[in-house]
Each structure stands twice: as C-alpha cells, then as structure tokens.
Amino acid sequence: MNFFRSSATLLLSLFFSQFINAQTQSDSLRVYLYNSENSLGIFLDLVEESQVIPGYEFLGMVHGYMRGKLANVWILNKYERKGVSYELRFSDDNGADSQTILLTPIDENTYSYEVKGSNNVKRVDKRRYVKLPSNMLFKVTKKW
Picture (tube, rainbow, N blue to C red):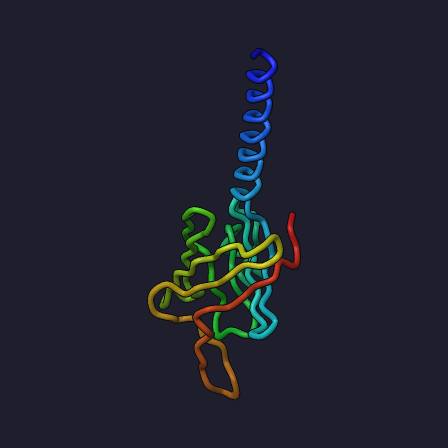
C-alpha cells in the first residue's frame, strides 16, 4: 500500500514539475520571427523592454516591433496572454493606425499570425500600398 502511494506521489510530482516548466518556458517569449513570403520580421521580448528599433532610438527600449518591406515600422504597445496564444497590439510609427494580431505557436519553431479586426498593415509594392495577408506563418530564426 505504501509502495503505491509513494509511486502515485512521485508520478504526480513529475507531471506537475513538467507542467510548471512548460508554462514558465512559454511565458517568456523572446524570439525573432520571420515570414519569407512577405519579407516581414517580428522582434519580440515579452519578458522585458530590450528591443531598440533601428532609426527610432529616441523611443528607447520596447517589447517588440515589426519591420521589413512595410510602409511603416509597427511598434508593440500592448500584449496579453490568451491561453497558449498571445494577443499583440501594434501601432505604426506615426500613431495613425493600429493592428491587433493573435500569435499562436504551431510547433517549437513556427507561429501562426492571425489579424483580429480590420487589417491595417501594408507594404509598398510597385509604388502602391498593398495590405498584408490576414493569416501568415512565421518561423523562429532566433531565440534568446
């Protein structure tokens, strides 16, 4: 009887330690994500404000930003954990537009990008503004 009780306790302890470890790792999102189809990068550090946007050093450090073949730089100004996903709120560099996206891990190296509400992020293509797709896949290219 004692053997079964101690075995059950050990198994439960191992389960909860793995669960807590997984939660801690996923709560500390520090990545550079890249979508090659649209030449778009997302720099994120949801642990601390450690990102300096090139050309926007006067803003100081931020939690994240998007840049690439875009009409503007998009700065992360709010984020919230939603289960396994992150709801990220970006504003463009002049403050005229904002965009909320849901970033969801698919596996260890891939994230799904899904626009919430209207799609405001645009890129310049042949001297025209073109909206980015509302759903994209991003690959993790760097973690720290």
